[in-house]
Amino acid sequence: MTHKICCVCKVEKPYDMFYPNRGKKNLKGGVMSLCKKCSCIKSRAWGLKNRDKVAYAQRENYLKKTYSLNQEEYNSMVDRVGGRCEICKREESNLHIDHDHTTGKIRGLLCLLCNTGLGKFRDNKEILREAIRYLDER
Image 1: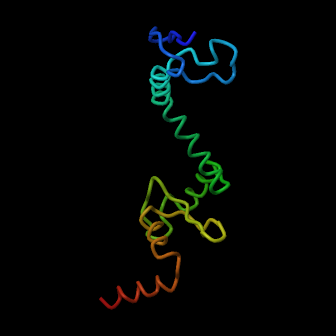
Image 2: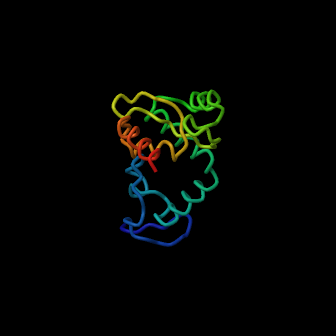
Image 3: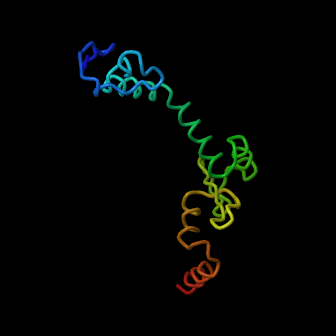
């Protein structure tokens, strides 16, 4: 038996057109009951339906893995700064976590422009002073 019928599209296809079913290797030839194409369509539909849940979970994982924070701690930081960038004071809906790249210590919350600006100056105070001098002279 080298072919199987997909339970969704009802088309007989070779086994390599199905994803492996690691949990049930001895059943149904060790492959899933729906073909790869139908599986992708089903996964995409689930992702669109659950977009908010997925985005929230991804954000939680990112905060935890990168900064050892949870969403509530991040929200508390946003409240502390009044939802404004700590450099330019602009109100932002998505403040970025600024951190010391050497120690990993969180310094504060910044808008995208200020956060990337510090990064472009390599967090170097002397270069920033020179930039200020340059602007003052112009």
